[in-house]
Structure formats: C-alpha cells, structure tokens
Image (cartoon, rainbow, N blue to C red; front, side, top):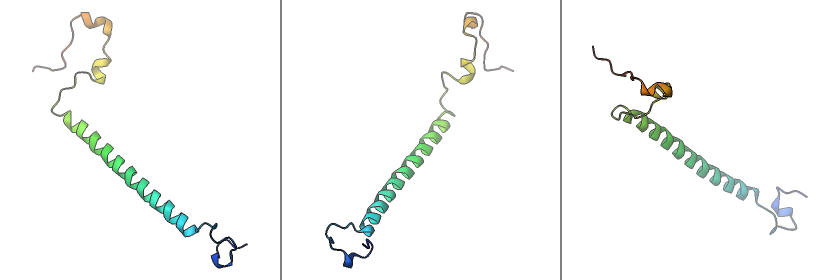
Length: 84
C-alpha cells in the first residue's frame, strides 16, 4: 500500500496527511525557537544589568572577603581600601 499516494488509499479518511504533520511540527518548532531565543536574550540582558549595577552598588560579600580566615575575624581586620 502506498502511503504517499492518497488517491489509491481505501482508508482515505483514516490516513494521516504527512504535510499536515510536517506543518504542525514546523509550527511547534518555530514557537519553541521563539521562546528559546526570548529566554536567551532575557538571560543575557539580566546578566549584563547585574554586572553593570555592580559599578554603583557596593556588594556586601565578595569571593575575596569569603576567603578570610573566620577565626581571625576577632583580630584587627585589614582594610581593602588603601590610603596613600
């Protein structure tokens, strides 16, 4: 039985049109790609805004300050700002 030739099919109503399936798959692929693109661009913009905001906002904790020896915190702490 030839599935591609619909005219010779006895069960024409039950046959699935391959073009219809391909069209539906293409529509879902386009929607998925659209949302993936929007999500990626949103992630890049949010990441950029976070990095740029650190120019004006002083972070309370950084990786450098987390590496301090916590036992010595009672001792005199060093200053990250140097006065020349």
